[in-house]
Length: 208
Image 1: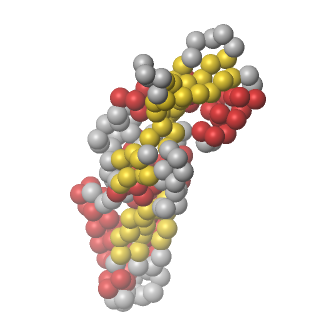
Image 2 (image 1 turned 45 degrees about the vertical axis):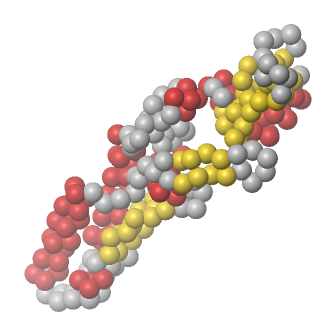
């Protein structure tokens, strides 16, 4: 589910000629997009968990392939300006929450090597990667503990090669809130300045 931030000026827009604020709302909506991208680029706390940093080979939160930032788009009308993204995972990153497995378990990449393999085999999901690897001669199996009991670590190996951790299997994963779509003090200052100027110009031009 996506997420959106909106600034409305409904009552104010009724006091001046219809359409006068539309160019300003368009400008503000683009600013809101730029502001959200800037927040992501600067890093949104809390920091990534150690495993996530290893898989991503970096510590920037909400950044991996740039998909989230690229998805943020402006919307506007005569009385509102907004920035939104329709990415399915945007809302849980914005608000936080728990992702629970719909099937047996969630497959969490165990290392950067898993990420590279997903790119190599053009796999978007764990199942797609496992199927592609098995077709390419890999064995994929659960690691066993000292008592011979299966663990939640999925290993892979090819031929006589050394097994390596491919995925960690979990019933659920808790995602912390990392809000990136919101109006901060600097945004509010910019918005108020633009609206004030637009209203001044409209009244000066006799469009009241």
